Length: 361
Image (cartoon, rainbow, N blue to C red; front, side, top):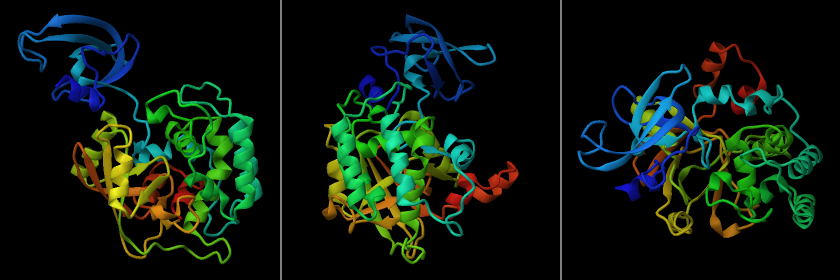
């Protein structure tokens, strides 16, 4: 139905794309996965071709590809090219070509000194003062919010992680789309990673690196932190956009891994995940993640979390997962070693150092 199409992220006759919008086609056949910019829109009655039943009214969209070729599609089979939304999913290849990878210095925390708290604090100040939203517009973070964040950072030993667990407001919420929401500290940090653009990435990089290090290592002893394993859940208020859902299904079909650009906060309490999933009056989306025993690549942060009763396990950004199963309401993942696919692809691309070493742990 039109409501179902809208709910999962496709265009509808009531809300069609606009000229110059960048779109991708998901109709099976010769136009599957073709991309381009919308060059014309018209209301028509279907003659039974193109996937819309005969006699039905719809919006016919003309799309121009980068090579100048054109194809037509009903709006119901088109989706925005916006895979860098909240819980943005990418492949290992996309990681290697990301701004995150490009901006990360040649550092391997297994052998190098971790980012100090002082360096992370300086990065936090720059990030807050020069933050931009997903459209590249400057955001003004209230002075009182900045002062509270810095005071909390100074008063906790593992403050880079502690701050992430808070629900500290940075400003008013201006978008219902969580991928464009910078009103809360943790969402702003995750959307910095999801959008993957400067200046946010460069400014926040030392802070992000310190968070990753604290998730993987005991700063006092330098020893690896191993997770005991088990099953955790995550509830998102919004479903993955069509492009991200396609990536999940293709990874499942081809036995490939996926990576989440952002940090992934999960809980051992399924009921709590369900509560988060439906807290904005929608069906939302549930993630089930199985963690192998003695896993290196996630940390139980209940003892440092602001909400200590949530039994929270946090995964670093760009963590790797195998897609066990996926449907419209739920995705079952298995946590994988962060180096999965990474070294071989890096060697093929001639890459050394940067985020390759960081995520290779």
